[in-house]
Image 1 (cartoon, one colour):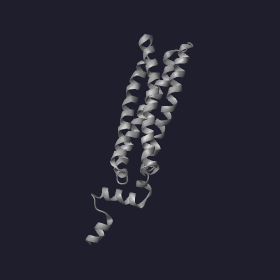
Image 2 (image 1 turned 135 degrees about the vertical axis):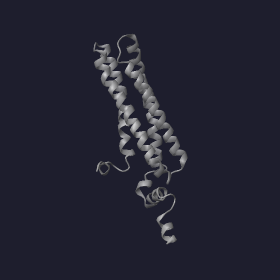
Image 3 (image 1 turned 180 degrees about the horizontal axis):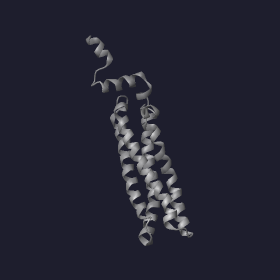
Image 4 (image 1 turned 180 degrees about the vertical axis):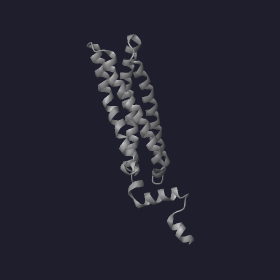
Length: 178
């Protein structure tokens, strides 16, 4: 029942959350630094930013996983090179988000270590933005330049996916054998 409630394909629906968080994180992180500078408690001010870092990493992992599920079907209509470019950018983004999350979590500490980690975490949002741009650009190229959506919208894409699932045999092959 749950599967019938989820969009198909799931990957395009899921990727919007990490994209949105990548855009929102810099103002939240730098805003938290400003609030701390103005006297806010670091744990309270940085806690919201750290939560967003965690949400970004989790949503990025989900996006990578759903992308891997969509990979086989999209390969039926798109060459492997642009798919690999997008996969590598997405995996790199996930690793960067995990590293910046680790730094951001250290930012929950007090003292000079926490302060340095908060500054590094805020700077890391700019690196995340650049990496996210690469993932989004390569994903957009898959859809708009290489026609990845036709794997789900055209009968040729659907037939190719059906052939892959049946071990390389199309319905036409099966009918011809009868």
